[in-house]
Image (cartoon, rainbow, N blue to C red; front, top):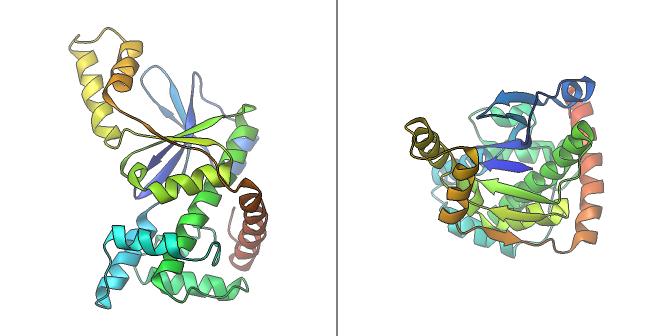
Length: 244
């Protein structure tokens, strides 16, 4: 399983043939043609939320650099609140922190009082959503995935990567950061005959990137968090006729 992590999170796996059925329709998975395969994936919210939080903080004249926000989130208490990151209201340009606070009120939770709690709740909710999509993907494919590969710019976020490992109870392996550019260059090398085939492309990536691995921690705590997350997501969906 992979997550292409950036503004959005593209989550899925590679299959030899398109997977089409009632479950792919129910869970909103799609099949994208790749190089000799298909990417069975689902588009999930990503770091757009953090980008919009940064925009809101800048408008207030507050510090908004990502390293400081991640540090504050790391220091905040666990599970300050939870929400479904795929709520359509969060796709709109606007005051995302206010929208998240509104969702907290609607679902009977205390809204975050500071930027550390705000950002931590976003990271934790993204990680718990990854768990939900992992469960859906395993139902669709009938497969068990022992590890999750996170690529793209979001793979540099160590806190989110650790939360993803905790939430899914899977090892998370990150890198390459510039996955799209790397893939583009490799396909061009294949096209001009500099490499022999897909296996050699894969080997080149493995030789060129030093992945970082994250092992799950506090899995019992996160399992309880996931139970609470599912209840809150269901309540959030019912309030606005959303599809989970």
